[in-house]
Length: 366
Image 1 (cartoon, one colour):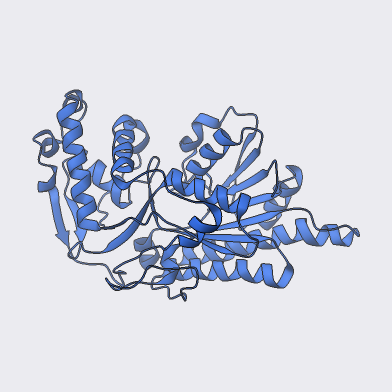
Image 2: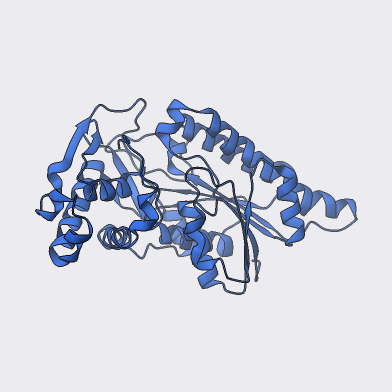
């Protein structure tokens, strides 16, 4: 295990990456963190505002496909760890415009692997030295495993890959590249496949923040199909904690599932968020003044905004992560239940209107 890490966090201005950076700097104040982010639509420098003045934090606006830039960062900051979050991740966008997913998720990962291999392995060997101590951690998704029937067992690390969207196919390809660079070149890698994350700084096009912000604007809460699609949900800080355990205790070359053992249908999630919003407006009367357009929730009836729309193409029915390996080998256990995590998330969005108000998209469905 590397005692004091110098980390390159790709996509560190995005939702999960930013939460990871905030978690890491709070819990490992002696470590250095360099964020590399292209600041595309889902990357937001404001996510990192609380650490901008931290002497151990550096932000670099750039593209992971720029291999020379990555090499320069690894050398100049003497980085020994890459935690790779950077990815195009919205399934709907991958259906209408897959090119960006191929470029970022596949070619971008390849660029990082090339740079890491060159700096950490090839150049030291050329000088007659041993490879530098290092770790390349790749953050993936449960969607690479495909879809599950209602009674199927949850995905394990041995589940065969069967991606069903351009997004999940691009992530599967990147997973295979990471594995190949370990087995072929000896790059010290780990990969984690996580379930759906939620929490602060979640981009408003995603299910839970979209429901919250639509309620505040008294807009319909559009649900794909019958709303019975099932997902396993994980509070984002619990994901950061899981990656921390993989870096510190995980075996090189291994995959680890990080999940919440927390399956919910989309319609039940939306109903729960509506109930929590109703309760918040009932207990805090100032919210009605702050959000005067939120007529349904002001009247304790946010659920009346629920609207069913046509299902999307290739919509996987169920994802579920079996995190037994991570639990048993690394001692991983989520700290938040879905109910406590949703309450924290709702309170965060109610208290951070300035952050999300400019990010809202129009006509996004779930």
